[in-house]
Amino acid sequence: MRTLKSRLVAGLVLVLFYLTLLPFVVHGFGMIGIGLSENASRQSYLFADDARVGNAAMMLHIGAGTVLVALVPLQLIRAVRLRFNRFHRMLGAVLIALALVTGLAGMTYIPLRGTIGGPVMSAAFFLYGLCLFTSALMLARMARVRNRAGHWAWGLRLFWLALGSWLYRVHYTLWYLLTGGVGSEPDFSGPFDLVQNFAFFVPYLLMVQIWILRKRSAHQAAWTTGL
Ligand code: HEM
Image 1 (tube, rainbow, N blue to C red):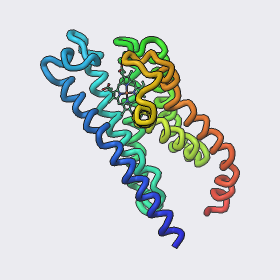
Image 2: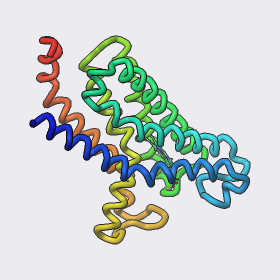
Image 3: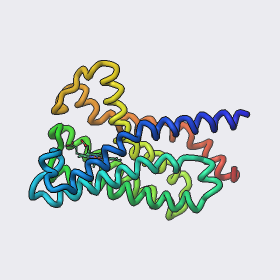
């Protein structure tokens, strides 16, 4: 009964997640469409005339990032992991590749074109890209050397980082619904914007780290007893 209840809750969370993700996915693919159009620079500030590398990096970034966010929750579903281990491994490899491409393309775009919010946003987003890229590399390494503790810890970090861009939009949506956008400016220079540059990934990474430190011994015991 309890299992059924927890499964129902997990299912509901997943449905809610995909419902909130839908507008984001539509927006992402819409931006790629704009990037591929003749007059991309007139439709979005993300694209510029005669900036082929920056434009291509942004389209690659949005494409890989959107698929990454859409697929990453599947990796944490326990039943899928236990019953379809091969699928778990294949999806893991795909997610690592997507995270590497998303991070690398974003980190290529920033020095070329900057960001709408200026130097603080550029530095914060670059740091976010670096964290995502490093976590993907470390997760691949841990899987390769069959380090279960490392795989678990880096997998959790990568999961929350992959959700970062979705969390960024969720924070903004909730803030605008609650306050009408106090402290947020169109050029992202308000106090809320400055905090948000880091608040969509740094606190989550810290919470994951605390979780890892608290649960590590229990996990290690389960691994050594084979549970
Ligand atoms: C994890 C999944 C990610 C997804 C789905 C994603 C998606 C997007 C989308 C849809 C945009 C266009 C925003 C708009 O239309 O205004 C964008 C912009 C951008 N992203 Fe990402 N992104 C992700 C991760 C990252 C990472 C890791 C970095 C850091 C390297 C990053 C850096 C940027 C930058 C610099 C911009 C342009 C910001 C601006 O000036 O408006 N993103 N991203």
